[in-house]
Length: 363
Ligand SMILES: Nc1ncnc2c1ncn2[C@@H]1O[C@H](COP(=O)(O)OP(=O)(O)OP(=O)(O)O)[C@@H](O)[C@H]1O
Ligand SMILES: [Mg+2]
Image 1 (cartoon, rainbow, N blue to C red):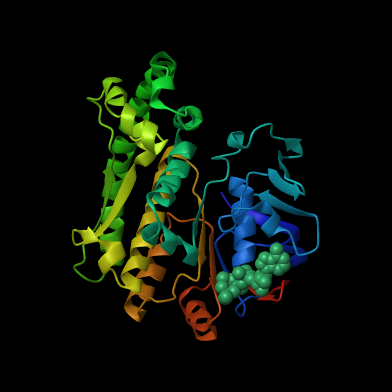
Image 2 (cartoon, protein in one colour):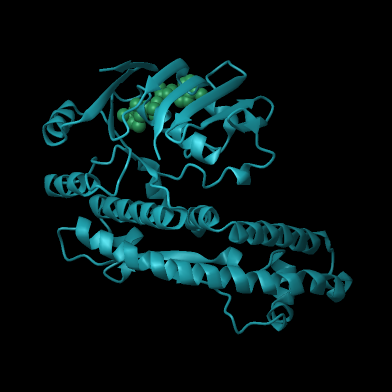
């Protein structure tokens, strides 16, 4: 799968821009603040109906405007369009037919975006890591997504009920039991799914990370949950008092984490910037392979500032890695001219897209 053309209006620092892409390698070149990441984010937006960088859509609108529009033509002759207008009206279209639900669009244009903000996956709390794996697993299995949505809704309702109680004497056990019976089934399903898929993912990840690493460092991912398949609804009874006083549900897959380790220690604590970068790239390339295998479509790859912090040997390994035939369309962004010239030498067919303050020039 590849994107042939994109058109953006009022998206971040772009008033109006249109650009055609190569179906192989595209190199976005420009100074800091030119709009390289913004353009990549627009491509990401067409795949996932949201920005990879901003949580609030209003931040994606060009200052002082009230809407943005992104349109893309794809290799399967389908065009997709995303529009957003204040206050909070988002629409996504496939060939001008509006989707009724965003989730119907997920998985249509698989894409992997590696960007400098990904470091948050290592540094931040477990919710970032869960979100990464949930977005991936939701694309490969709609049933997983439906169960996850149902689970999150139930947890929200259960917690709201706990918060509404003024004293533990008012707690209606039968009322909670209605939630708990459903939660146990969903916990069981989601836990099992995450465990199995993360095991497979981990194998791919180990392989890629050792290929990208020219050192002996050993990178691993470990799925961790306070739920296990032997638990029944009695576990909720056991935690009832704690749940009441903390006003939240203490047991369940909403607390899960994926532990990122280097040489058996948390990479967050001991990894250098370059090592953490290789970890993230390996993670995202594993995402690429899993999406490709399950969806039978080769995902588009966006590599934003990927070489920053990597030594020359790792850059060479990485470039050779993504030049393999199993990759399809690739976008690389950089602001260093020497690197562009190096890339031009190694990759014969590369489309250079110059960006300057929200204006695009194709070479
Ligand atoms: N909603 C918005 N309206 C107007 N300008 C915006 C908006 N959001 C971001 N920008 C501008 O976009 C520019 C940043 O663009 P971007 O992050 O794409 O730069 P870049 O080319 O990737 O730079 P770098 O090399 O530093 O990564 C900034 O100047 C920022 O002010
Ligand atoms: Mg950038």
